Image 1 (spheres, helix red, strand yellow):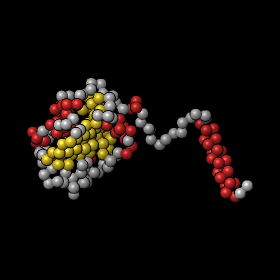
Image 2: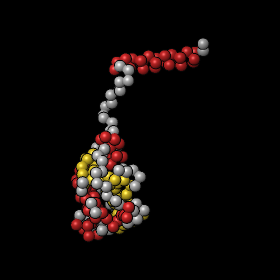
Image 3: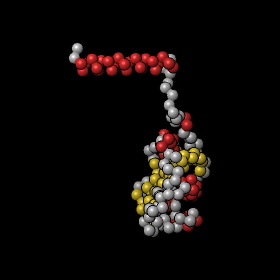
Image 4: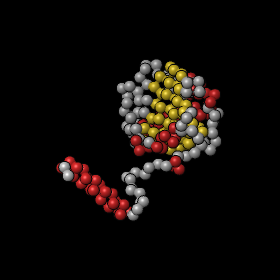
Length: 191
């Protein structure tokens, strides 16, 4: 038998032995423990009272009119760009931005739970009776994303990007503000 074939054969035997030892320790069919719990669909809160947002697909920015931006102390975000299922708000200086997206084919809450280990800030809640999550990749970045489930496979995503030149701050503070913004959006949508 050539040397290369013996090495490959040896590796296969070793791998088989290690697999056998792993199964023998916990018994056949025993799952291998992981360092952090993997979320299941049972972890994701369900929408009990769906909110129909289909009439807002082409006019998402109507859910956050100028009067509400003023009330939220965000009047500088008056420059809006609208596309189907998206509202992009930018401040007058071009240094800060928010985006509101309507997800019609997947639950942004389920996606948030699926990827929750990627976020330093992950705060499940309810906004106007709908399941929500405020999340930020870094706790010291002045940015936050708030997602809300509005139906079993639908929802809203609100992203507050960090201001150019002011990226560092408290994500928790930004998430509190973005929860208030999402509350206003859902109120205007009829929740």
